[in-house]
Length: 186
Image (spheres, rainbow, N blue to C red):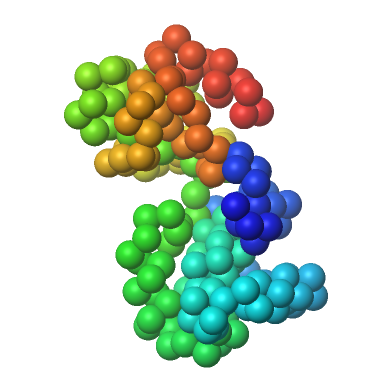
């Protein structure tokens, strides 16, 4: 994984942690591609044959800084990569890995396909909803720390009930391991 993507399991950046859900829609947008991030983008562009080819990592950079990819971030990426905003929006809306709305500090994705359900995925989802205080899938916990969603596949069919917390993959989660897992997130 490139430096632009961060290490697997890394926490959101301090900039993301400083943003509460309420502030996303009212605070003026501050460009991401300035200073060190602009230098990082410029270096990244040297590794691709065209600016368009760097679209996915550029979007990751926005999401690392903001915790999601707001429309202003899409416009910024479009401008620096010389693409249309509509093209960038199409890419963001195609890939589920890009958040188009603010998400909780710990964004938990649980695989609930048939093989995982046989291994107890629905019970794990229910335990996560109970222990996080989230009332239902996709809704943030009252403290804004957790958000649980179901996903079709995490590409880890060799493990019982895999899940991801932000970018960190966790294998073989059980109902019994949910409290310790959540405690480890802080």
